[in-house]
Image (cartoon, rainbow, N blue to C red; front, side, top):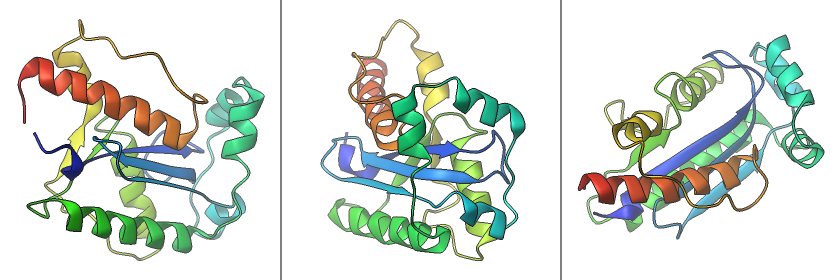
Length: 179
């Protein structure tokens, strides 16, 4: 199993469906050798007509202060962050033996569709092949007896969440004997 060709993506968002704004992109290879983390200036989302959901904002208000402050403190533009992520993903693919990166998100209807919609909104090509998206939530449901290790870092910050999910996905793939 080549862990460097599998990338876990986690977003902190302003909603729960494609078309919502994003606050941060966190990603890491499953071997945890390479990681990406950048935060977006929240107002950038309005410029590209990406939505904020009042229920999601209420949810954010119930989270730890540290997670809120971290996720809402972005200073970079949406195009800059998405471009940097695309460049990072290209670099990761160059370290993979087959240059074939799979990207994983927590839910077939969450991270990857939301990020795809953001790339569409800024008129930038999505940096992964359309058939290389994978669902971590589905993987978890295939082996619910395989529990994740203790969380490291601040929950609901994109990179810490991505790393936690990648560590758990490794355990799940080994338990299921999936490469």
